[in-house]
Image (cartoon, rainbow, N blue to C red; front, side, top):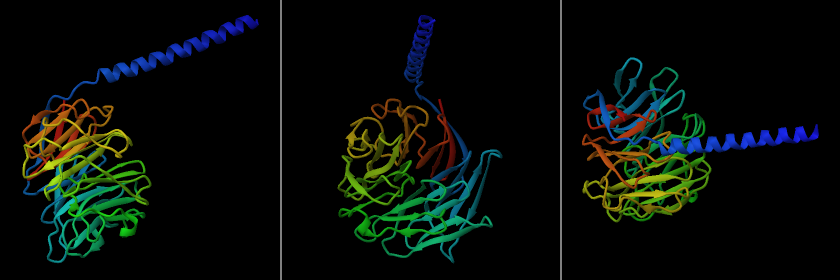
Length: 356
């Protein structure tokens, strides 16, 4: 009886081992069989006269905002774009940052005064934060969760402008410079695509550019900060990093360049494998030149990236080593809905991108 029991146990554990090995092989085969992205179909949603550099997913819908106080919503179910205009007294704010939670939509203007709006109880956009300073210029905004969010901008003192909410966006507090690393001379950021901030869980990365281009990092949702160097081109007001994205808390990618030299593809792409502490240049002198936005394709094991900019839509199927141009149509920004569909905003265009 004991021998039979031992034999049964041996057979059981042998079966479990074979099952585990089969699962690992199956997963590996799935990764190996990852189909490359080699084409894109552009479905135009609107060609209204609006410069769109900031978009945010709201379920399957899309919120966006742009210049001259214009903002709106793309309703995917009705396949309809609705737009509106927000005035502050006689001012028509220019919006470069938007974000959303399950309950609210937010939009933040550039320039003085900085104006941050939130959907109120009536559905109207209500002013929840205002900052007046001749140097104020906010570049990006996003949320960790439904209660906690962050926006960043150019320095008004000796540190980056960073504002945080812990109450669902009802109130925002600017972090004092004694809690942030000091910026270098000429270090700021670009309000090019609302992707200067990347978030994975509690981890937060902020990309700067200009005379100095670095990555500011917080492991605790903005409570403490440190800063890391990047090898991107820098030294001029138009150079440096323009966009950052992370696939998980170790693997990240930054892209940029010099927007006055859109075809220059040297020192404008870099990758990290250690959570942003060190960065390595990649695809040197090949692939796209200046790009304003880069995003990892979701569900593709961190292997696939898509970037957009003045020179069109580009894709990498091997984590940034090689790139292929899919379209010459220029966009400022994009966000993935799933692993084959993304939304993109540009000058007088909002579109849905279908990748194959």
